Amino acid sequence: MTRSKIVPLNFGASRRQGLLALSYEVLRSKRKTLAIYITHKKVVVRCPLRASKAEVQEFVSANQEWIEKRLFEESVRDQETLRIEKGARIFYRARELTVVFKEGRKSRVLINGDKFIVQGHKLTTDKARIQVEDFLIDKASEYLLPRARGLARHLGVDHKITEIKLRKTKSKWGHCTSAGVIQYNWLIMMAPYSVIDYMITHEVCHLVHMDHSKRFWNLVESICPNHEHYIGWLKEHEHRFWF
Ligand SMILES: [Zn+2]
Picture 1 (tube, rainbow, N blue to C red):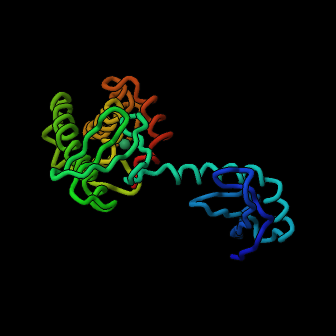
Picture 2 (picture 1 turned 120 degrees about the vertical axis):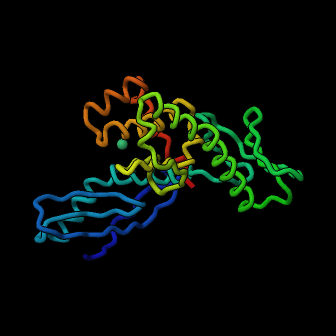
Picture 3 (picture 1 turned 60 degrees about the vertical axis):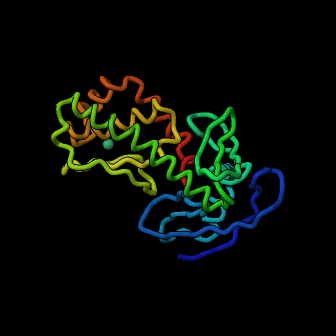
């Protein structure tokens, strides 16, 4: 693998401002074509073993606009990830709210108008974050657990449930094993109820069909007719719920 510098690219919060020199990685392998991948703000060029430096450079230059666009999109996504800080804008139940820290003896989280109020004694960002985590975990236990069990009962598969866990994971909203362990990411409680219901449905339906076959999706469809819309909604917005 070699590293080389390429021409400065325009990107950032304002696309016209600031020139940033950007490096890219070149990964050579037994492939026939060149391709550019962007992951975690890194630009990787995959190319055939024999591709010359000039060839790679030219390919990158030719795709510069696309690279800029992708990097810009990533930087926007980065800025939009969930931050529990004074004045931060968060996306809760499909609404833009402003985080407000409020001094008070009682620790709690309240939603009032367009304010997401974290109340506590001598709040720090760390404390506030833990409070919001507890708030979401509580919401998940109250809402998600009984609904998942209820739906499983309705489908006649409640005996298949070994355990329903609530866990924050890096990239998944839910998971269901053949041993009957269902796992939900409690961060889903940031989403609208319709989307949460879709997630509940998805995992519980796996107790009936342990795959993503047509039969599985037909069952999901019969319970949650708008599931395709919710999947799309999650794809578009889920990066805003992770922290
Ligand atoms: Zn699945």
